[in-house]
Image (tube, rainbow, N blue to C red; front, side, top):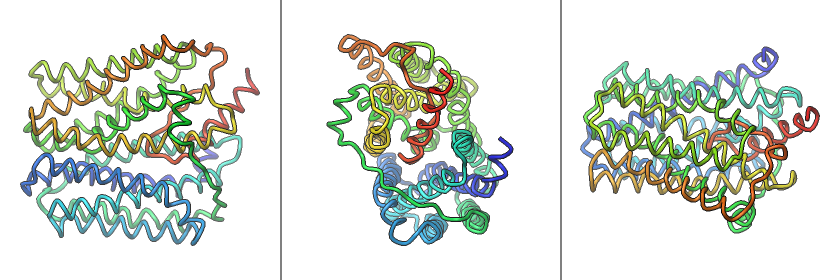
Length: 415
């Protein structure tokens, strides 16, 4: 681990600052939107726009990198992110925010692709898995740290938009000055959705549903918090608890995943998420109990995504993995775009409980579909399943493929 840190500390530090900036904007806009008088559904469109931009960026960034190089793309997108973070406060209009969210989603997607390819190039075959796992931990820690930053200034002012803009600008200095040489960048072709569905119907449907849940966690938590009457401090703690749950429960669920039928584990984990959401809908919970709900729904969301990727890989040949990863990320992006819109509609219809009802509906649908699929195809024997890797919906297809390639190689060397 020390070798990984010494080789890639600048990149990881820069990504930490970037994720603080990204985490601040997600929570801050939900709070500021209420201050500006935007409706719940208007804010759902704003939040959905980020995922639309992210999906566009994931398709276009590789071509941009091939045309002008990593350094120029990295610097240009970093400047765009920094500018957008300031423009939010300068143009308090929900339509303008929607456009800005598309731009910043596009920019962050390109930054992730660039940073991950650099990290892949910096790491050796022996420590690439450690490097990428550390990178994903840094992502989560950055978003958690961002929630503390929300409490340092008035969200009605400019300062909370300026601080993350400065952090993003500073993030690129150690990266661009320390990381070299720029890596070569290969092309990753996605499978069509039809091909993916033919390989793993549960993988495609599950990833689509989890895209909606992920969007709820990342985009609509602060909007729900303002509607529910939580204070700024409570909103930030609740949001941090969601990401902390995702960070803590990845590895226990991954450990179980390598030792039992993955579909049965999917059903159990999804139903736990449904039960957590149901507690918030059925009972008038105090804030301490709401934090428990946050840990549950956060603790199932990212691990379920990783579990679905691992399950899908059980039905793939090694040379299909990269294309399948790209296809799964595309399906996840479609779900993430629709998620905030559905939550906004539900919250407009029934109020704050709509946030949790949406999570209940999606996780219950996932559990039900997984149970039905268990009647349609026999399980892959546990001894023949591939490894589980903690991956995030925010990482590129190349990173998912690199993590699984290394883990599969290690598994074959140490059966």
